[in-house]
View 1 (cartoon, rainbow, N blue to C red):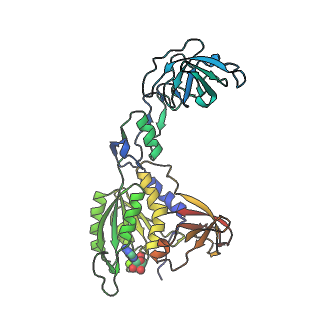
View 2: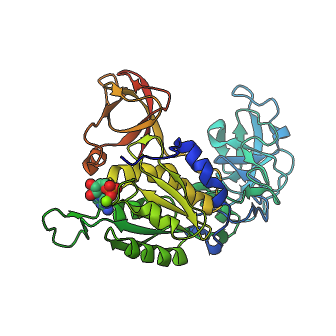
View 3: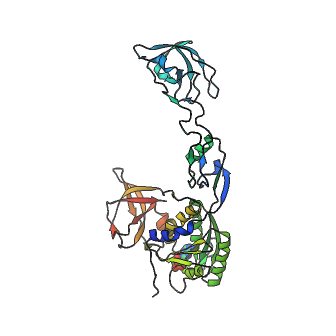
Length: 411
Ligand code: AMP
Ligand code: MG
């Protein structure tokens, strides 16, 4: 029986891959508003102070704090009202000794004011006077100029993944366009004599191609552009031709299926035919997903994912997802969402490999999160459809016990 040589732990496999992921894919300039999930191609520096003017954090009255010194409910400070500073307008009111002006949350303070008394801490005497029922310190209830961010501060380092709050922060400074890495293009070649496109009639012994579509969707989630290239039979030349086209057009090439070591498995041979160094890893110590190939040709990373749809998704998550981020210049890859839950049942495993088990999440009667393993032959796509996340049994464990708290990687 053919053997896998050189089976590597997933971490070691990714480390072997990393040096090939150094190149950059180039830069796009996009509207900041459209930059969600993109990776910054340069440091973004603040062109101005934010806020640009001192702003009240309360509805109330801007005051000279020293005029409220010692004020209390029993001994309020009497203040003359000299007007208001309307929202969105410059402050015209100027305070003299013992004066106050109406202020709104987010609005400017009157000139010479240094604090705001919250409206709930005042009493209206008539149209021209109020009482402050407590003292305020200088700067109280005020956001100072540059308190959010200072002119010249780096607001996002090169290689950051842009989040919704980043879009808000960048636009707050008037930066309407940002330089980001071009989205890595991921070419997908689905192989197998048995496959038909999902829209075609399925003859006996045939199945519909799942992986082209799951891999495309995962690629989009990871910030890449999926380029489904071909559905090809288990024929060396056909696969090689598709791969050569893919290498010319894409940054990463992904084969689905044919990644094992039988005579029908051509991925490794095809990768070796594409150029140096060809295959660098064949076999990783995980289940499902052991028959995985990692290679390089034309300076581009190439992955041979197992055909089993569950394996293909698990291996994509471990290797291809981080590779997409790396090529986009992002070295701190956003951690996938996880949650802690107590296992509902034992998960048997074997030490020396990582096992990945789909789980469904439930609330127990006392409100705790419970993870119910979804067992089933690992090639059943519905084990994933019917689950909420996946649990890893670490390399050094021969199983996990019911009741144990585990991290569930959520989809
Ligand atoms: P292989 O990796 O070629 O040994 O394939 C393993 C299993 O995955 C076989 O049962 C294949 O029929 C199945 N398979 C291969 N490619 C796909 C695909 N694109 N979609 C769904 N199942 C697939
Ligand atoms: Mg096959």
